[in-house]
Image (cartoon, rainbow, N blue to C red; front, top):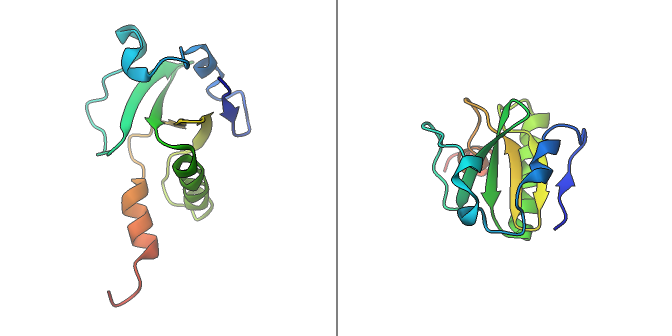
Length: 117
């Protein structure tokens, strides 16, 4: 399985050791963290610890992953507290987990709602 990293590729390189050919629901429980405070998601999101950091792995379709990649990159460029995208596979987007970050759905609505609506 191919994992594409956003530069710098060293951040989260330990994610390559995860059993990507398996659905994350079948990963050994020792690989997955329970994060008590997390946002809502309509997709499967798993958290893993690698190299002293916590990463969120969101299982989504490739077109949606590409869209979120662009959107989250724009949030970062605009100075919004968005999670930095590290990369992913064809069906998973990987980000660094942040305690305080802008939820992609909430921020999209804030950015895209026309004035006076």
